[in-house]
Length: 133
Image (tube, rainbow, N blue to C red; front, side):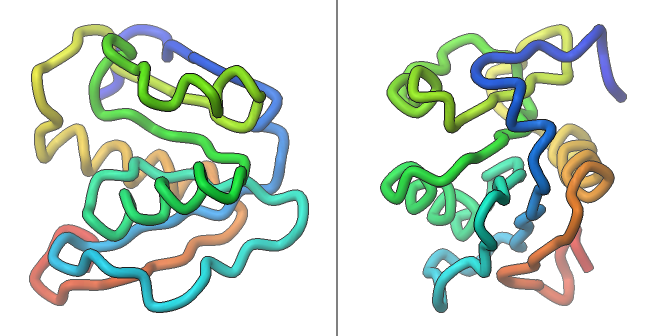
């Protein structure tokens, strides 16, 4: 599924940190507590589901190091410019072309990438009928 070489925007040194993969099925938007991050760990996720997006917003707010595996290209990434410039965000776009919206195949690929590159995984919400199940 991967296209050409991945494109990177931000701090590639985050790839060397221990990474906590965060995944959550669609359908649950609110966080139930805090993400169990240890000092020196980065969060890696596609940040696609509502709960994953809530973790992304919290990570930005609390200045946590994060790696965003994007199911699209890097075009239009401007909302997190501060986090990128401060060196606490890396955006990875593993696909050559840029679709208008993420599709299911790319979302699955991103989840698999997260699981393959994290040191440990946290599942915030699991829908028994969803992709993660």
